Length: 206
Image 1 (cartoon, rainbow, N blue to C red):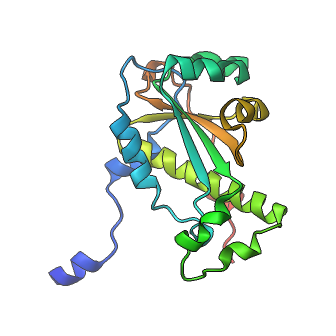
Image 2: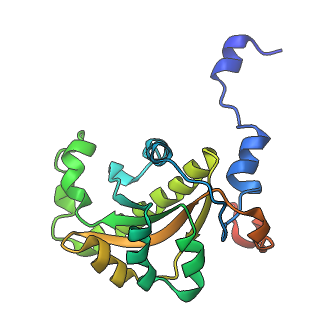
């Protein structure tokens, strides 16, 4: 038997119930129960996901939580027809976006390299690539954090990004990435699970 000190310091996997909640049993939801998501939970989601890593601690994701009928109506014209009902009935729709001005915050966010923002200034391809990549990763953290707190998620594209940017982010350097409906899912409306690649199909060991 290992000494207690070793057991307390050894990294251990989370239990199977957690794995099921985050990945194995979690599904993309298209229908929702009539049960609100409190603002306190949206704050808690962010307080978890913010600790996920981004390159040079850039943290380019910006979140807009649409919680009211009026806010949802502003989004409606920009949704693909197949995404309207599932979005309008969701308790919350998050617009996951990214800020092309993220590098202005690097002196505070990445203080051990005070001049880190210089490599981005005037380099639009690098700015766009860094913002989109890391903002997307942060969007994935949002899904995992929401599931960990007991919510269901319905991430999706299928909307007019340019229209959403004009409607919600005009006059800023923020651009929309994808949407994610949040709430308590109606499991009777979940589709059958679709196939996934197996390890050998997509993974290489060198």
